[in-house]
Length: 149
Length: 221
Image (cartoon, rainbow over the protein chains, first blue to last red):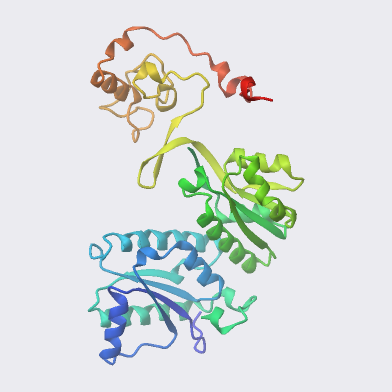
């Protein structure tokens, strides 16, 4: 179901050692990416827990992108590998609750990967547009802007 | 420690259907260590239930609480107020925890986990069964490796002869317990223990004789 007017809200958890710098570089390179994405800087994707993702969905996020370092390149050795497992675990929970598991995805990019980051964001937004708004968006929507973001 | 596994969300929804105010009660001891029912799992399951409730119009109101131990009265008391203000309790404790809560409050208490076994953390994120609580420990005879638990045939006078290489013939992904016992006794110089034939085990000390009670008269007042 493609909804032309629907603008998905994508939360991107970006590791400060790679994808956050890549997002910064994308800005320096004047690369355009849609304003639908909210970037959350994290010290390492290994800091991200399953409940962070679940809470984001509960509050109405349409999708989540977890962007960590290349495998083998984590500043803390294995944080991105932990995140990979947790994203997989979240996907299981999502499909069990009735949400599409495609709404969350993990990517691995380096600090120089501004172009791949923008590509991944666009690809994820296309997937979310295709899936349509999160069913949790309309039902009991969070009341404040802070909660929405 | 006691090892448990989570029930899937559709099963939990099925258990809770028709209920409104739900206390999701975690336990901070064994099930926290085996990543099944601690504070974190309470939070994840509560989110999952809230999402499922909103998608299926079930009107769940989920409160989260984790106490230190669900099998101990002193800690259970700390959940009293939360239990009182909710309709039902979904316990993420082991079977003992669920029953301990159910015995003390006139509220429905449901099990949110499947309690599996007494075991240890073998390696990262892998737990293995080590004890079936048979009531009469024979570990001293077998170099600290339990044939009652770890041999698929519970043989006290093994091996059965069916193992292939060092693998159990019943489950090829498990080592032959008797191979382990032999190696272990050899390493610690106690192979002579295997020369005697062990008498059949008295299973009445186990669960086969009904649920068990341990009473320490010297500690009673």
